[in-house]
Length: 209
Image 1 (cartoon, rainbow, N blue to C red):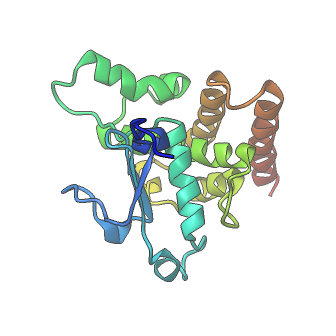
Image 2 (cartoon, one colour):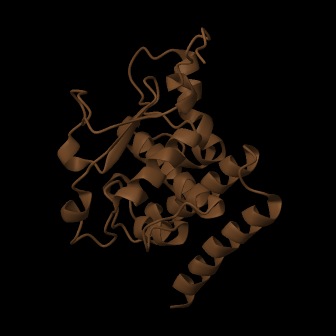
């Protein structure tokens, strides 16, 4: 039996297009990336050689781990957004939206430092979402492990913070990430309390040591 029903194009229904082609943007270097997603194109790329690339890293990255990580960014609608001269008020609001309480505590800071802080808050959000959704793939890639890495200055963004102010700002970043996800309905009040307790417990241990 034949049918004249028009075939449905399901491409748009997938929401996200997984590609093997590395990013072609001038400001992105695939050699320094495990994966990326393009919000506008709804395109996601995962480095096929990352197990070899990260085998000596503190947290070796697997392809499933990077896929989970990038999907979490996509789910949270994260986007790369910086500060620049002549920026529109709307774009500035979009930049500071994830830093509502934190920006009050930071006060004036250089643009590159604010961008590093914003990126780190979003990285914390990703790890929390992975945990509560059961998406975490790689060992030692949980929220508290990442929080400790930032706290102790082992993350790439850490040099942008001024020590000794660094430690207080890291705590504020963790709290901001929890607040953001709670507002978005990704965390319940009980889950939010648990994550805040983990931060407080770690800080308490540091102060007692």
